[in-house]
Image (cartoon, rainbow, N blue to C red):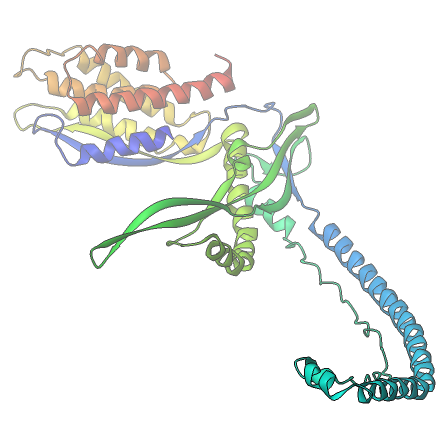
Length: 449
């Protein structure tokens, strides 16, 4: 993060000259070995790593359960067929019985009708005229019994269980080789630190729907309506364990991995059902994408966490140096100091102890320190005037940091803070100071001083 802050400051400075016209800015880039923030025992030179994920075991169980469900479904179906056959036989017997009884029922109904008609015919003409206001003019109805029919039970159907959704299977050896590498250590088993990443399953929640009351305008009239949006939370927990022969050093889920992330709906929806329809159409494809994405991103976070805390990570650093140019004055000493320091910077990646780099950086530092003895801040005509002094401070503070002279870097920064420098100069120096403090924290953790 501090590297990014420095880079931002550098970019701001590129567009405007900070000092006088004889001060040039030069971008520099080099690699260095970052010390671990939580160093391991210095005798440990190797590491071995592995990724654990029980997808295959889970899939095996899912498939076994699926086979059991299919057998159970077949058994239930066969049982239903037997019950159906029994009910069907009973219905056929009932039909046969009803058919046998039907002629008698039909005769009884006909006899009843004939009797009712006989009674009707016995009515007087006056009574029949009065009955015309009644349904069917008061005449009796002939009640014909319903013909027997087969009351068949519903035929059973076979309920097939849904095929299980299997968990994605990853190449765990490839994941370990890609994401669990300890920079500065060899991949081996002798006196090694063991790195284990245990992956959890992808968790995707149901959409969290929110609405807003809005107004739209059509033909000069306003109409209220609701606008719906949704976010879908998801995460994949990956637990990291760092272990040596002496015991477990770390066994947790890094914070950035445990944070829930979200997919948000795009566009405007006018109902909850529309939101849910959108998610149902997106769910399968989104899940497939997130299966791989969450592994790649979270394992990359694990790798960064691992190397930042325990390893010797090679980092590319970008910075800006100040060079003094003036035809009237001789600044060859300052240019020689810059060249010596730059040569040292380019050797920082040769080892975390900076054994090759420090002598060259110290050579440049000595030249800058000697030049500062000539500093005349109030004399614009002096060889080491205010602008040149600031340029030396600019280069020297960073040189102190890379030479592990943190006390001198802090002292020089404190002195610079008393000067009437520009806001951009101060912002740069503040960023460099913060970078120096971060580097010192690692230096102190590793060397204990």
